[in-house]
Image (cartoon, rainbow, N blue to C red; front, side, top):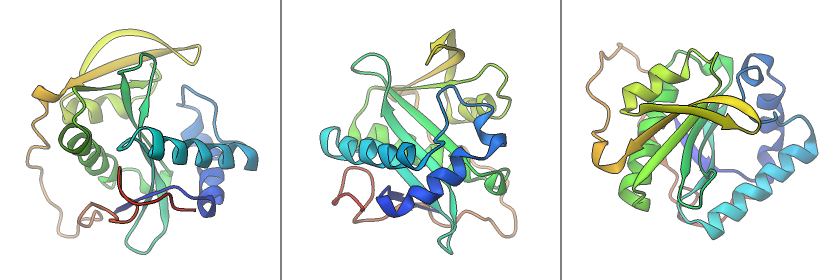
Length: 193
């Protein structure tokens, strides 16, 4: 899997993700439903790359360049809170992309950016995200509201980050070496347009 900065060339990928009902039914915020929404998200991501180095949204693609979804480290609520997030197309579910990308973002957030903690939220009926967050080392905190919707909340302190423990490896792992592309990885290079 490769993570790259979002550019305008990715607007149709964002629309595809935003129109996938199996993805949008578990969102706390509004889906990317229009071309204007997708372009606005690209503009916002590129603003984050400049104003909050190391934070942003990243286009996830497989080894053949096919769009898998997005990963994010974004400001949330208070000035110091940064939330980790992932949205994957159903064709990418169950293949290890979410855990591998989540681990890469945790390492990036704590090692490269130097964040003291990460937070995460999900809809109360989302059954996939909590086990993923627990495997990454997040602990559940008191619930709350996010974008006017009830949310389960999780937190991971930098001092508690241990990386991913070993897991059983299948003969052919769908996740290649995960790397942030040098010219477009978190906190480096110029925005991809």
